[in-house]
Length: 206
Image 1 (cartoon, rainbow, N blue to C red):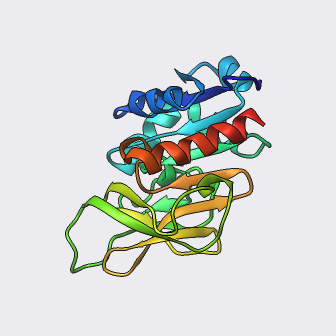
Image 2: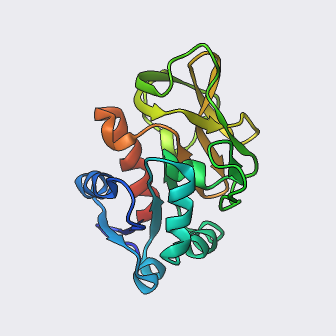
């Protein structure tokens, strides 16, 4: 459904502070619902998969709540889909953080540990270098600052559209079709984060 306040389903699989993403989406104009209800998710104009913590427990919780297949199905349709932090990592095929546990496989590739020689986790503001323009980053500065908390990140690939520097280039945004994902937390990133979420809500509205 679309409208003046588009319905955005924030997938509720019971791990981490999922409500902070919901509240930020509400702030920028969405009717954001924290939900595990398949019918409500089906009605949504867009879907968000947030996440914090460890890849393994998050992936198990997605399966336990029945949301893993729902996420796969909705990422394959034409609605905007956004993964945030560990929610981004879950979109990939697997992670070095949890060997033997399959990810959702929506994005190709593996989540890798951050390089040696830097502090783990990266827990700081860092600026992006945008490789490609796109609707999610429209209106942002050339090198916008965002807040990161993570020890793992996706491999660099053809789907990497923004990177940050942390002991080398680290994937910060990936895009595949109508699926966007950020390694940083837009909901904790002040004006730039709200602008990015506004852009996502505008995609849902249209």
